[in-house]
Amino acid sequence: MEKVMARGEQLGREAQTQQARRVAAQLRMLFGGASVRAEEGRVLVSGRGIVKRWLIDPSRRFLAGGLK
Image 1 (tube, helix red, strand yellow):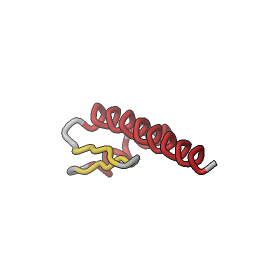
Image 2 (image 1 turned 135 degrees about the vertical axis):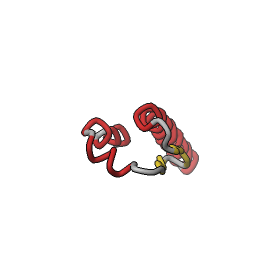
Image 3 (image 1 turned 45 degrees about the vertical axis):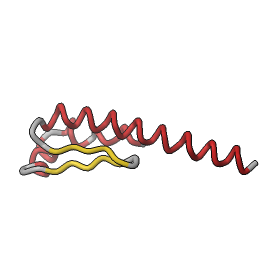
Image 4 (image 1 turned 120 degrees about the vertical axis):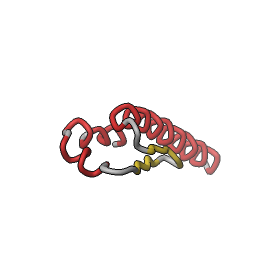
């Protein structure tokens, strides 16, 4: 049973990482010059004016819904 649980956890981590990469790719297209990195199942966005651009455009705000 431990092997089954470990395999399930591994598959979950891999799926989470793939989804984070997809969201990161979409954010790169939306933000252009911003730094967008996907690592360990999370997406990190940095750059000047990111928060302002995020708040102005609803499509950017709700893009992270794909991580659910």
